[in-house]
Length: 314
Length: 290
Image (cartoon, rainbow over all chains, first blue to last red; front, side):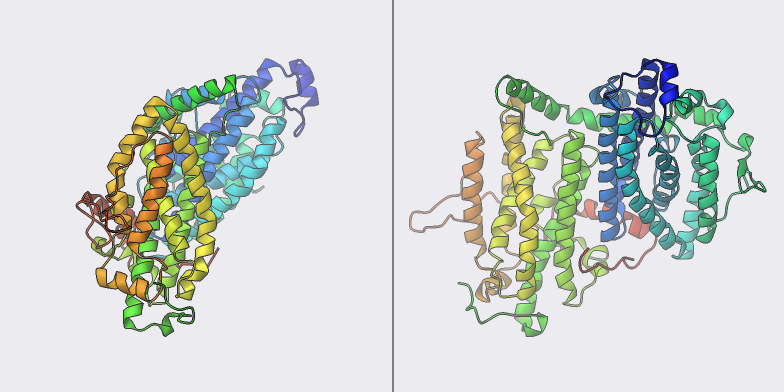
C-alpha cells in the first residue's frame, strides 16, 4: 500500500499488522505510541514516591495500583508499537534511558508534595483521557484496542485524583492554600499538555490524514477546558489571571499563547529541561542497577531456546 | 496444646483481659509484618528488572497491604482506629519482625526475592497454625489470606530457581540468604513470653513459635539446598526432638518493639505527607472489604 492508498482507506481500526503499510505510516504510528508508552513510564516514575507518602492506607493502596496500572499501560503500548515492526521494546526502553525517547511535557517537572498529586492524577490524567478517548478511533487497530483497556483504568485514576483534590479543598485552610499554590504552578503546564496551536504542530497533518489522530490539539484543549475549568472552580480553586483564557460565544476557548512559556516547552520537548533530565537519569540509574537480572534471564532464555521452552519471565 | 474445641471465642466480648491482650498481640504481629513488608516491596515499583516483574511485585505489595488492612480491621473491635494503628503510633510500638523493615540495596533484586521467600514460607506455616484458632474473627480470615499467599510463594520459588541457575544470580541469592536468615529468625520471636504462653494455652494459635520455626527451617533449607544455596543450621540437641534457639539472632528483634534505625526513618517517610498537611487523623476509614 502506498501513502495515497493508506490515506484513502484510513478509518477507525482499519489497519492491523496484516496490512502492508508504507514506512511513513509505520514510523508516524511508532512515534505516537512510543511517546505515549514513555509517558506512562515517566508518569509512574514521578508518582511512585507518593505510594510511600500517601496519608492513609487506602490512598497508599490506590497509588500503588495506579503506578502499577501505568506500567501495565506502558507494556501494552510498547507491544502495540512493536507490532509496527519499526522498533523493539528494548530499543524504545533504551532510548528512554538514554534521553532520546520523548514523553509528555508535564512529566519533566518534579512532583514534590502531596498537594501536587491531584495536579497529575486529576488534571493531567483528565487531559490525557480527552486525548485517549479519541484514540479509540485510531486507524492502527492495536493502538485503538489498547485504548479500550487503558481508558477504562484511567477513569478510575481520574476519580481517585478528583477525590484527593476534593479532600484537600475541603480540608484545613492550610491544605487549601497549599493546593491552590500547587495549582498556580501546574496550570500553565497543563494548558501546554495539548501542545502549541495547530499551525505550529509539525506532525499533525500526516497523522490526521492517515487516521492516527482524529482531533486537533485545539479541539482537544477546548474539550478539556469545557469540563475541567468548571470542575476546578467547583472545588474552590481560583483560575490564575495568566495565562489569559478567553471564552468565545460558541463555547470554545482561546488561550493567549504569548502568556505561556514556549521556550521552556520546546526545551522540554528536546529532553533538555533540567528537572526532566534528572528524572530520565534517575530512572536509567535504577534500571542499570537491575541489568544483572535481565542478563541472567537472557542467558537462560538463550540456553532454553536450544532445548526446552523458556519459562515465562514474569 | 490447642484448647478444646468448645472453648472458642466468637468475638472480643468473650475474651477476658489476658486473652484480649494476647489476641491483640497476635494481630499486631500479623498486621505490622504485612504493612511494613508491603511498604518495602513498593520500592520496586518502576525499579524492577522488567515491566512484567514490576507489575507482579506491585500486585504482591497490594495483596500484603490488603492483608494488613484485614488484620487491622479486627483490631478495630478492640477500640483502635486507623489513625492510632498507623499514623499516630510510635515507632517502637510496632511489632513487626526486623526482617521486613530492612532497606534494599539498590538493584538487589535477589534480596527482594529471598526475603519474599523466607517470609512467605513463614507466613504459610503460621497461617495454617491459625486455621483452627479459637478466636473466630482470626479463623474466619485465614482462608482469604492463604488463597493469595500461595501465588506469592510460587512466584518467589520460581524466581529463586531462575536466579540460582545463573552464576552471578546464585552468588547474590547466597549473599541475601546469609544476610537475611538471622533477621528471618526474628519472625518466630515472641512479643512477650507471658503473652506468647497465653496465645498457645488458649489455642489462639495451634502451635508454639519453636514448632513453627522448626518447620520453617526444615522447609526452607530443603528447598534452598536443592537449588545450590547453603542455609545456616539450627542446632539440634541430642536429648530433644526440637531445634534449640540459635545464637545468631540479630541485635534487634522487632517483635519486642526494639527495631533497627531503618524502621524509624521508614516510618518518618510514610508519615511525611500526613505531617506536612498537619493532619491529625487518617481521612479514609478502612472499609470492611473492597
